[in-house]
View 1 (cartoon, rainbow, N blue to C red):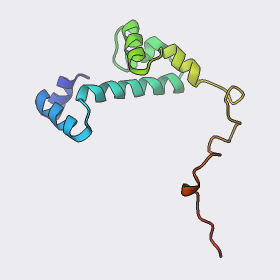
View 2: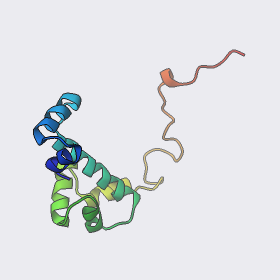
View 3: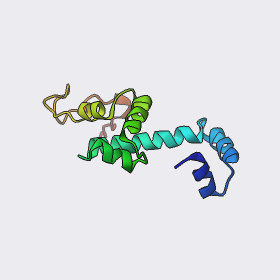
View 4: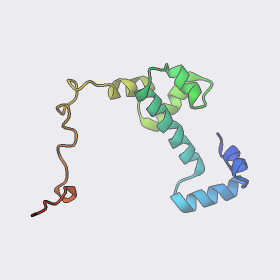
Length: 115
């Protein structure tokens, strides 16, 4: 979806949408749309076995090569490297299995009840 398409869906001009979004979020509509596409691509890369080409199509890119350039520009890594990095087993992880919440801040721990 483009900014113009989003504005049309909302019944706004692109300029009014841009002004309203920037005032509310400090970001442009284009930034928010790119962030949403990137987040969905990350979700699909980590949660499915879809090919990069299929993921590219799912997030609105007809050309997988262009999707790869877009993803690298947005994240600093390629889709394949992102998938490989996020698909680690507990043995490859630096923390023991089941211990990912072991370092909680004491300020958020439940207080003990004296009764």
